[in-house]
Length: 109
Image (cartoon, rainbow, N blue to C red; front, side):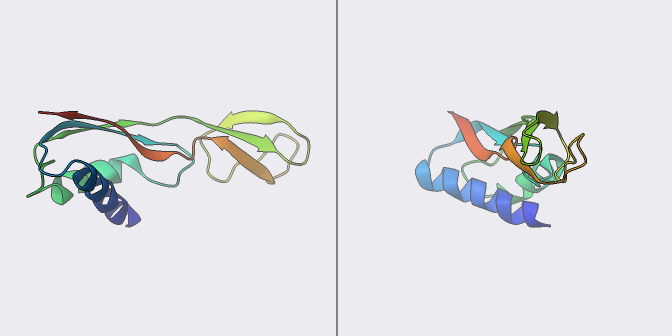
């Protein structure tokens, strides 16, 4: 489960940037085409934050939808599928959005 390592990295980044600062809420953006499962991150979060300034913090996850561009026919379309297939039949699509994985905001105590 790579979500554990991702969650550890998120918590490490926040604690490194805001050492000794109690965090009340952490907002994270996980795009639907990122390949990261938000529910798994939620599950890992409480385990990872134990003993850190984020212990007891609330995790809020925004899941932006995906949008891709077909390199074969130049169509753009919304999708939540990591392996998207264009209406023209091509799987040669390039993601335009939905691959985000970032910390958007923190609220401190």
